[in-house]
Amino acid sequence: MNVTSYLKRAENPATRAAQYADLVKEYYDSVTPFYRWGWGENFHFAPFLGDEPVSRALEAQQRLLVREAGITRGKKVLDVGCGVGGPTRSIARMTGAHITGITISPAQVQMAQRMTARQGLEDLCYVMLGDAMEMGFEDRSFDVVYMIESACHMPDRAAFFAQCARVLRPGGTLAGWDWIRTSESEDAVEKALIDPICSYFTLPNLYTLTELRGHLEGAGLEVLRAEDMGQEGSATRRWWNPLEVQLDSWLSHIACRLSSTLAMMRKSGELLVSAGRAGVFSPLGFFSARKPIPR
Ligand code: SAH
Image: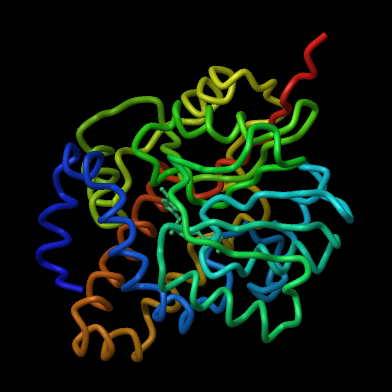
């Protein structure tokens, strides 16, 4: 990855929106091997109750999604923006549901397919290449559509959630969590914390829970829940703590001198921690909604 060129293009909000497909693909194709190294198979955050291992917190968060979305054995489920399929496989294993994952990153598809085969989950999980803004699935083809920290990348959230609602069957559930701005105001100090996150991670902008709720309703869905889980759980151990520990490690300090991609990732991790600590950002905007059954 040419980090300088990527950051230059991603710095401009209009370019981020117009070239989202290229930028998001370039970003994830490059960072995914390092994410695997640092985070394993699940590329998402979770609240902590106490000093439980990160893997336990991630699993608890996925179980919450399973309950909220009503994912059970035999259901047809779509995982939008599935990364290397960590949550896809984990949720399939928990429930026996049939889950299709899509990601815009060819590198992630390759890794996901290899891991799915190695873990003997090919009967339940299928990860494919695709752009969530233009999903080729038939209308009403899934019982559940979920997304974990991926909607934030979509250049037009109203159109994106409309796509998700289209492929969901009436009575089906859409759920997940997303990166959000936790303050309604847009003062300069907050902008200085939020704007670089959008550039580094190639997000068109960051929306609030109120805006997210509006998009779900605009897509004809009945909102069941929309809340920030970033403040939940332990008061002393927040979602950013493991990231902060990683950033403080000597390995991280040395590694970012060896690779410009790692240096970029280090900076982007620091941005998340600062915005989290300042209380203006959360990666845990949780939501669930139902597609009404027409009378
Ligand atoms: N949900 C996964 C990955 C989160 S990272 C996990 O929790 O492990 C965000 C994911 O969204 C990446 O896999 C990225 O490729 C995907 N993504 C972003 N924009 C996309 C788009 N337009 N179409 C499909 N996938 C997209």
